[in-house]
Image (cartoon, rainbow, N blue to C red; front, side):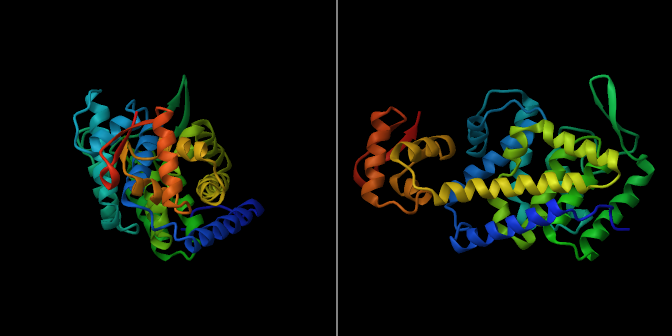
Length: 317
């Protein structure tokens, strides 16, 4: 059975807006990001998705774990990051229509964190906020059937993939098939569904938009629960995707001063880099402009410099 929702005027408007932006990104070859920038976007994805679930590690600590460096922090938080890195490194091998891949991903994501990772729950569960039960999930006896129906929807229904990814995300949170890890699995699987048609979504950390205002995320889930369909959550998630694309395109299309470029790079770039790495982010500037920017960055004490000529390495402070 197809999950219930309606195509609202807002959904149509957002799909049109997203489609236009995806076309612009393709024309600008923005899927050809440098490996280091892809790495940073992956770190932002892991950081935001796990922060939503209460992880306390910083982006710098997550980057250190990615680089196989030792990090001081709660053992559980460190393991969550290591598991997430493993899953996202394996994302291209996962099949978005496969329940087997789905359970395999959950096992990787939650290994060492819960009992029986990679298995659907075998007891009832409810979500409590404060003193109130905000969501009572379907009985555990129904989970297997509901998830099979949901994967049949992915395989057989001809819905627009943008809508389909949002529907799956919502229905997964509603069914709550696992004792823990449902939120991060919902966001991971939405990325995987989108990647099938739009590979660039592998490198777009829409989780950071959700993380910046988590209340709206949970509100959209709650409102859809009350209405008995996923329409409001679809509208919310499409708006998140549209905003993510808008931010990336806005950055690429606007003329920035050297100070703005440096500020953006320090906030979003890699911790250690070369001039070539800097120019991979700002593709429209000349090598001379990049050199002037980097001199100014050193003068402003944003990063340090070591080495000479093409061997120069910069480290963000």
